Image (tube, rainbow, N blue to C red):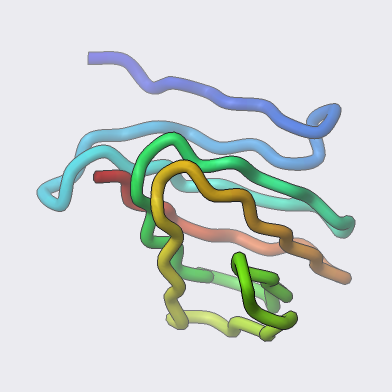
Length: 93
């Protein structure tokens, strides 16, 4: 077993991949900025630390705080922004 290190947006978003009882997951951090992600599988994302502004498909911007969760279907794109560092965990199915 190995830990997979992912780097996005010139190092401003990084995550470590792991296997959990709930399935595959990543634990990551985002530096302040705006980012667009595309999903290849269903995702459930929970903010661990900080405040994450999220724009889901067909919806407006909504702020998520620690322990709050949102879901994204496979094949979708979504936007996020943060003014301070954010930590998160994302589960994939």
